[in-house]
Image (tube, rainbow over all chains, first blue to last red; front, side):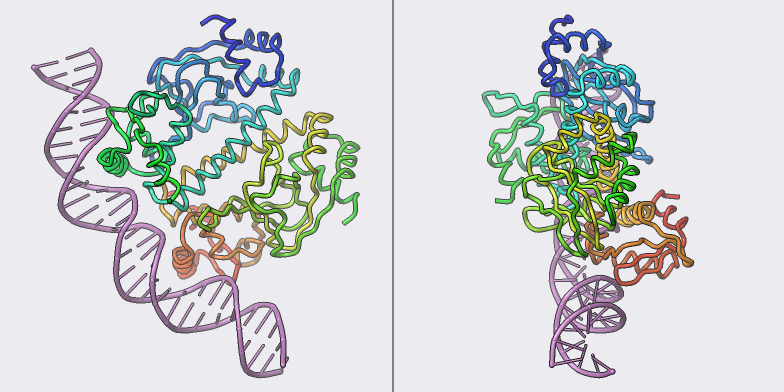
Length: 231
Length: 231
DNA sequence: CGCGTAGTTGAGTCGCATCAAGTGGAGTGG
DNA sequence: CCACTCCACTTGATGCGACTCAACTACGCG
């Protein structure tokens, strides 16, 4: 992956939408390029927020740890998405840990550089505001779900969201295209690993999904939707 | 409340931090001034996002309704805070309903005006980004709480947050200075009215709080903290 | 081939929702 | 000013969804 390709992907990143090509190329040159192999931690909760990241390739999981050691999954990041940026905008420490779930590559800008860029290209600040706003709205919905809905429905919703974000058509249906354990699903939905396992097993029996070790394929999306939406 | 007072408060609003006085006065002149009496709805979930609001006086509750009619409280807004703005930045409909819980006054700018202001004074966009970022981080924490913690602790946390935001020292302790029903607390914490009532009654017996109709006074903050923090 | 990690599945428990009455203070209208 | 009517709140009884505890299985990697 060379610089030219980087700026190609950056041009598509929502954070740099509407910024002209030459500027994006310059922005790309100012970035530091990082790699993280599967399982590697990109940054850790509690570290001072060093840099704003944009994922170029791979998949990254952002998690938060409670004081007593329980984990929750905040979100999965796909190529073109930013992560670790809000802490940079707000100042302070990273509120979560970012871990590569597949071999990944990313670009990063420290707070000072990001500040300069936003000053030079105010469109970046506006884009960032829209992105953060959307995430806040999405999280409000998830919050509402968690507060009001049963586990089975929350799991159905989570799986459908993941499929929309990282679904890949295969002959059996739609495969969620990265390693995803029951534990991960549990941490996304506020359930336990055991409950998730039971529910996925039941769905497998009904032919709604096919699943294996860290792999879930949706065979009948419509069936999941009807669980998620109360039909 | 005249224009001069408005811009006085606006100067203190986080959204306009660092913007110079003359500019704030101009911004204030561009706003439309609205009033809402206790119980009145300022804007409704699903309406097209018309305007970004800053509360001048009073208290406003932002709620979301689930498809099947259950409500959750997203947050309470105090003087100087913005609300209904994210929908304007992102575009689309209001994701929630804003209701005055006491007689309130607010300023509002429509999307076009807000866009102009952010272009003219880029500091506003940067401030907005920081505010929205902070809210996202705060909501992530609440999400984590909701996913991992027991009801009693979530209620303790909610009450302490409210006290920090709207607490008023009185001789008995710290009064949450606006009408707050058990139902509200329930909708903030993902519990039922009944459970909240039971828990508050128990706390009242232990002398941790004093409470009446839509009123809660914290008598021993330390006691609540120790419930909230697992000591 | 063996070990570790992911997943399954059963039994038992319990926190909290649900269902069901009932109390009392605030506001309203006669 | 008093009676009436809500509406916020309380409190008991009951049930169940999901967690907890506890084995056990099996896939994949070194």
